[in-house]
Length: 178
Image 1 (cartoon, rainbow, N blue to C red):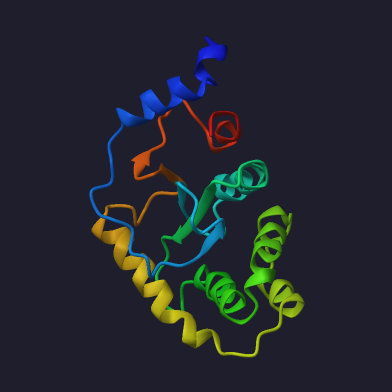
Image 2: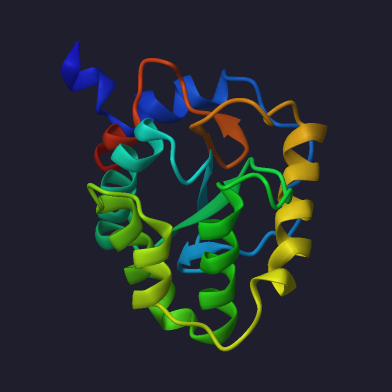
């Protein structure tokens, strides 16, 4: 059974039977890792403090490392409310992406592998030239998309080319089937 589970053709067949997100991903949601022109897109819908989201990031990094024809789009299902502490690291991620895109992947690896998710320490290590306030439009765009697609209260959620990842698979399985 395990041999079939990790067979790429079996995976793609099971994937094609899953529900598909009807809305196209807004290309303006731009937090994308890997080859921007890749044929396969993994979408990770998450929040920066979700434990399963944190745990899956290393597995997704392995997918990127081993497959140049995959990109990962990260969509955070958080509000832009300044009282929502989850927005601070996400605004920072977008600011890093705007100022020095080459640092983003390393910054995300550091955030997601940290045992102590301390935004102040992270911000001190990755100082910015611009204001976090400039990133609020990105947060609003992502959250609006999550609400429109019923994904504003679930994380993590994974989509492969618009199809929901089948329940029998985890993010860690993707490096074996993509």
